[in-house]
Image (cartoon, rainbow, N blue to C red):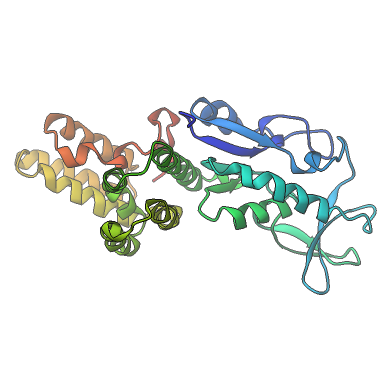
Length: 319
């Protein structure tokens, strides 16, 4: 098992000149920041089906019967849909160990959303398509963190994606090392506060499911079901309200150790965060300080405090 998360990525986003016009869309954060902590597995689906660089532009066509086809803009009868499907069928089964995928926005092969659709007469339609390769990727791996380059400029979506990548990597590593009931329970215990920050109702729902682990004879079947539930919760972006509830919950662990001034200071920092006056890094930093002073076994194991490498600085940019 790779010690770093492995992320699939559209080749043009790495800086490779593989776009139809001979250019690229290199992402600085991905290659210079995230790239220090993950390994990339680049692919250009259009080059993989034998198209050259440069090449005529492709477009996504929705036929009258509702099918989606990939055809050349200048020669609408030249269809490469079957070639792309054949490549996807051969390539995707080899990606089981991936922890995420970053695709190129607006691309008829890689776009994740809002890809321009055309009709069979070449008329421009609405931006509501999904690239053929990415559509197949999402169908094959519904639990996989997938984002496109444009959306990763949003600090909330960027942090959420990275958080999911590292969570899935830890889960994949657990499976690679050999599943045991104890390891699965310990994993879930470490993620309790993190899940609570994402969605309280779903956090409460997954608890009884994990408690049923002793009833499962097939641990791998449990793993598959648990992975889907876990990643679905983490995909929901954590809200300020949920974070505040978690921070208040953590605060309770130090009530007996802090004097009235310290309790008031901690409460005020959390409330300032709730009201949008401080970033989440402020209460987290203070809580981690008190955790160092008054260690608590349960809190020390919580992934919530460091869901990804702190050097990425993602919590500096999100509220």
